[in-house]
Image 1 (spheres, rainbow, N blue to C red):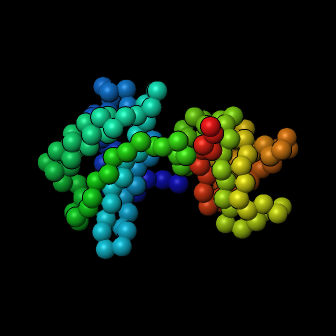
Image 2 (image 1 turned 90 degrees about the vertical axis):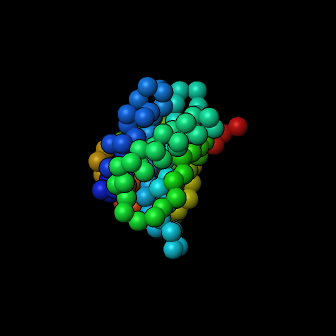
Length: 153
């Protein structure tokens, strides 16, 4: 999975804004939803991101986006926390979630499993290694439709 050109341009503009705030980018999406485009920024920081953090980044980023105008079409900007059930897509996500429980959805069942919770215990370029009920199993990344951190109370 890779960021598209627009997302890459926005990341370049966002990085100087978040650097001094001990905030980091978890994910970014720029996509068409119905008739509109949406630019979503998902942030995190040690101890969790707050509404005031999101507001500050949103205002600063909005000003920079207005000034630099890297997106030709109209869009809505949304800046939010990555959330407790954050999506796991990139290597740094796998690293941050190693040893934690994840909710997995597959495009099609493998060994009778289509949706399940497992512990993330490893990964490489092609596969995820998961522990399910004490058993280690490997799943091709391209067979996984959704991988999210499990919300545990």
